[in-house]
Figure 1 (cartoon, one colour):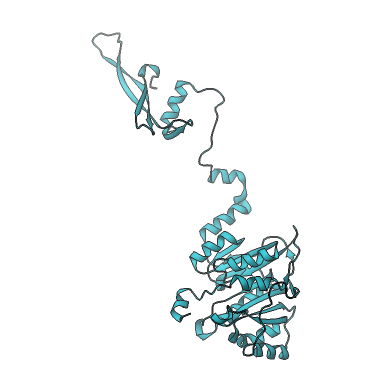
Figure 2 (tube, one colour):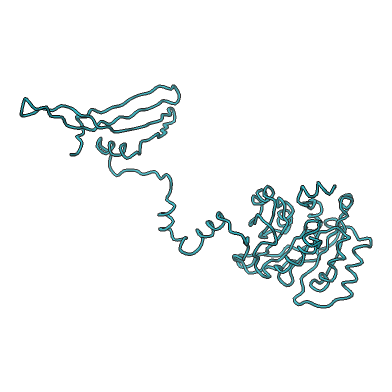
Length: 350
């Protein structure tokens, strides 16, 4: 792929489904329960397809994704359990809170000429629990730069190249290992990883050809730290509704009342009640349907003056009355119907 096209895609090279299937075949499904859960983290999740496929193959896993490109993040939000739309270098992650790190980072250079593959590895692997599984997908030649880091922090390392013809595109490989409980100096392992960067690698085994080699630790269930370092109003509002004072139902009802709630009166409404409702705006462009007819209804009340009998024949007396009016528009025929009540029914208050 041309360099300019790669930049336009934000260095996004999704893992082929056939590769995900072969990697998943090397991992034993971990039993989960209400108290224990397997958490998968993909800090470059794209549309979320690879992590979703991996999780489905193993069953019972929680999925956490990070994606910087907004359109792909919107797609990933539909298939993953948790998602942050932003940079993986600007997130807060629970320390040692994840069972597996699925890492297919951008194949490019970052600030200062440092390779992004290595930067993603060193920054995000802190989120792995000791014994947690690393799935590191990079061009084969890039393994040498991370050889010392991988050898000192991971054990049980194995490396496979993509199967043909997927390998031909970017000559990618998959390094898999378990995070060590403590950092060690492992010169022999480092030399092995360096050799993998240039030597011919075995192909990812086909599903069913070998027994599973790795397993993922199940962790205590419950929420973990997983948030952007930047303020996101929608995320903050959702968090506020779940915790603390903002979860109080009385307060929520006061600040966020239900927009429309059907109310059935205890007794049939009288004309005076209807007039008050109309005056209050409850019958303002209301759509009413009865299955066979759809009408748009609007009501109003106006004051009208009428002469009344006076004790002094030389003095004219007028009194104000309320006139209610309801107009219906039949949405099928387009006909109007005007329903009015005379002022003699309701006298305006003084």
